[in-house]
Amino acid sequence: MERILPFTDEHRMFKEAFSKFVANEMVPHYQEWEDNEIVSRDIFEKMGNFGFLCTWADEKYGGAGGDFLYSVIVAEEIARQGCRGVFAWLHSDIVAPYIGSFANAEQKERWLPGCVNGEKILAVAMTEPGAGSDLASMRARAVKDGNEYVINGSKTFISNGILADFVIVAAKTDPSAGTKGISLFVVERGTPGFERGKQIHKVGLHAQDTAELFFEDCRVPADNLLGGEGNGFKCLMQKLQQERLMVSLTAQASAERCLQLTLDYVNERIVFGKPLAKFQNTQFTLAEIASEIQVGRSFLDTLVLQHMAGKDVVQEVSMAKFWICEMENRVAARCLQLFGGYGYCKEYEISRMWTDARIQTIYAGTSEVMKLIISRGLGL
Ligand SMILES: Cc1cc2nc3c(=O)[nH]c(=O)nc-3n(C[C@H](O)[C@H](O)[C@H](O)COP(=O)(O)OP(=O)(O)OC[C@H]3O[C@@H](n4cnc5c(N)ncnc54)[C@H](O)[C@@H]3O)c2cc1C
Image 1 (spheres, rainbow, N blue to C red):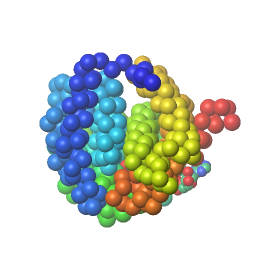
Image 2: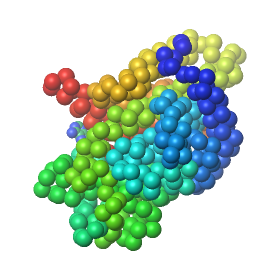
Image 3: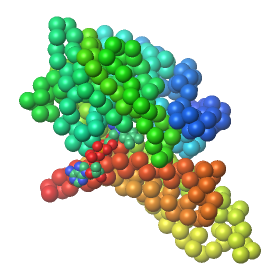
Image 4: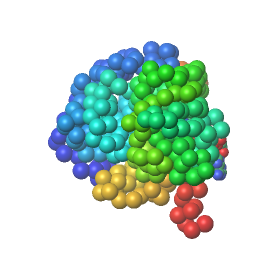
């Protein structure tokens, strides 16, 4: 079925160029990055050089001022070619937009060009050992001292945590004010008192570096406060729609890749003297999977259009984040089953698709948290 998104010739040319870039610059190195549990930082610089990062950024910061469809293309193409540990979409379309939307003119001048050209890699640090789903219970503190803030606390599970040069850190400036006491700070690599802890070894998504971060009497200039004191939670909430849309896009594209890998495999694999594809169980399983994928695609593309039109679709995006990420997990597990024992072997990509899928229902808000939001929307 043709997609409903209004891709123009420029989008199509961009997609072709980026697709080649992924094939040439990511795919050949991806296993090495998986083994090293981190991608090479020069992939960000290369993406920046070719204009593949922060495609939405204004020309005066080195961007192309492109619409959201360019972001869609980048996120999907990385997932479609099986390189999803390259969190360029987190950098460009989850973290950098905080700077794009909430930074003042001086801060944008200072930070955005490096984000666009890939010299500076971004991360966002909200989660703490004692505060994940319940973000409001975070304990990191930022205390104003003259023209500086002194940050103390720790963050965990931070994507791009080792590579990041700029980390947007959420900390409490007024612990008595609840969510209105949370502020955001840009903490730069090398700031005294900012240390990275150990890299976290995960069951999947190995190429993506995930780390603990520690802040001990870490002094940041007051000029690094983003969006005003006490506005941190509001800023985070404002960006959740796009964050969850981005994760849904990667989940959808990954489910599509699982189907493609499996279609190829079942046509080649011979069992009981005929291709696996010729068994009714295979056909029905793949028919069910293809139907789920199509439902996800139609819903997601509709949401992309509404997001681009500036509509508040937080409820619907929460549904998409919940359903599409769960669907990706179902699809990956069922596809793996069709590979038999080979599906459980690392040399078959479907095994990685399955382990990589597992995080999708957890980060950027768990499926349970999505259901909380959806049920609130139902007036429950
Ligand atoms: C690989 C990875 C990358 C990540 N990247 C980042 C990042 O870049 N930046 C960042 O800030 N964070 C990041 N996170 C953190 C992630 O967003 C959290 O792990 C997630 O929000 C869940 O928080 P938690 O792990 O503390 O689980 P908890 O909040 O302890 O949840 C445990 C269980 O309880 C359930 N639960 C919680 N509250 C409720 C409720 N009210 N009702 C019903 N059930 C509930 C949850 O759904 C879950 O099943 C990452 C995590 C991982 C694993």
